[in-house]
Image (cartoon, rainbow, N blue to C red; front, side):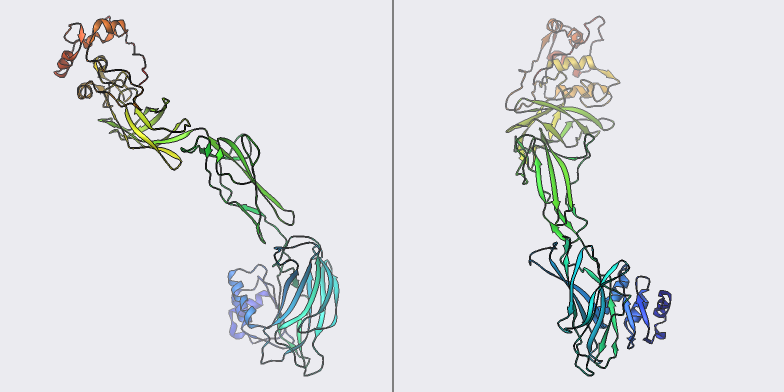
Length: 541
């Protein structure tokens, strides 16, 4: 019967009576047809062959009924070798057992069986065929081929006498091979039932017992050897090996602890051993995952080979950057900008080293926390943050959290230092007076509130807390005491003659009296012909 006919019978299962001819069920047979056939009777002499190759999930579920309800020829594989072996190796014995299963106890028992088993002669060499443990008499059998397909044919029995007691389940034939190549899965089926041959069981009264022959048991050699859990990396334009970068751990001056990704290898038969080789920046290569990767680039190679000689490997460059990370957050006190902005903030460490990093702020001066690169050091005790343009410094203690340094809080940067000497004094007032005006931006000197002008609102940053000093780290990097007055002559000698206009009362001194006048809104008109502005030397606060 063709697949279309079977499918029609499956759709109209009431029309299906008893199978009397030869029926082949394969992936072209619908699920309903498979179900209908598996639930009907098979007359004596009929042959139903099932080839489940290519079955979908629904077809496979219907076919599973066969394995528990119908009379079957089953082909299974056994291997003779070390019990702990995962694979069959060249030269080892492979034994194929042909089984009768699920014969109805209400019907005749089987006393004889005949069948043909296909095998792959590029992987197996035929040795012998014999009767099984339950049908031990080999009436005839041997090796042969049909076209390019090698096969073994057998006829076995218990007795040919009419009425002899037979079997309902049992091994009807045993076929022995030698493996000619290594790498077969030990649990794999190495042969299949030849569905072109009349595979059948015979009762003691010579009646043919209906039996469905199973097929689709493939030879399975090792294949698809692959590595799992190889960590992802960033492509490197200089070579084909991807990079994975880490910073040196805050608790280490030599490298970083990197978690072993646990790379494994497996093929279609099971797990395989993975070996590791690590080429370090200096020194001998390693073969085990280290407790710490050193600063620099280490190339890790994972490799595996199975017993068939299939190989697989993967590489990653583990780069440990010669820097630590510190997590910082800073807010600008009293900021009122019209839009978010970014400022370069200077961070000075307890070792004396200073680094600068851009911090993003909202319009009201709330900064976004970020990680900043700092030199690798055995230890840090504190860190100071400062906007070099406008603020005093604020200091925090440092500690290690995980792989990074962290600060004890958020830096609060108060404006009022326009001369970057970490004090709020008369020089900042003089700078403010000369900076007054519109058309400013967040980077303009003396624009302490970060709006679009330097004016009275910015004067309050100087007047409140006048003569105060910013924090220092471990008492270092401080530039002296704040000054409350400076003469116009000294300003000129310093190249700051343009600041003469901050001498509002024109007494030759810039001092508290001038601050008091500024607080009342009195200023001098800009003086023409003064020295051009020259910044103070950048002090090492």
